[in-house]
Length: 99
Image 1 (cartoon, rainbow, N blue to C red):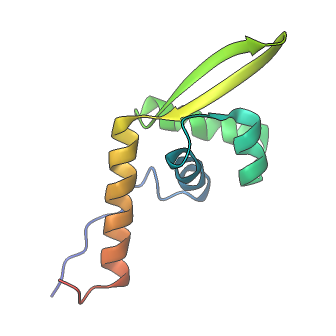
Image 2 (image 1 turned 60 degrees about the vertical axis):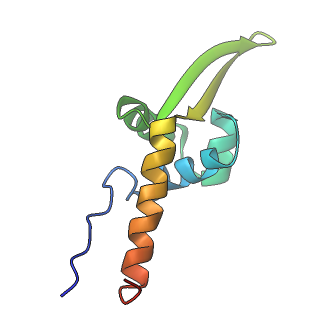
Image 3 (image 1 turned 180 degrees about the vertical axis):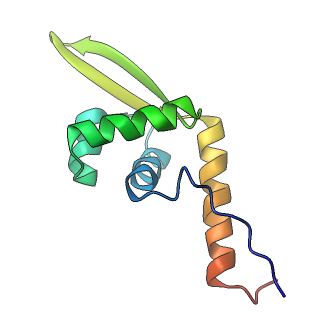
């Protein structure tokens, strides 16, 4: 019987998975962009970004642009590797006979 690998619990959350998916395709993304794309509240998004940052999946840079605070998020090499592994593991669940 095939044994399935455990899915990364950090990425197995709708909002965190959406954020990492968005960051995979860009160099960096502003907090407001991530909020708009995910439909999350600012508070919930902030909490989930902090969790991803603490785990080393993303980097967060805060700066000012035209006197307005700007929060930029960027996926790390580690985060990229974890996402690729997550997708690979998920594919194994979807196609269990392809091994």
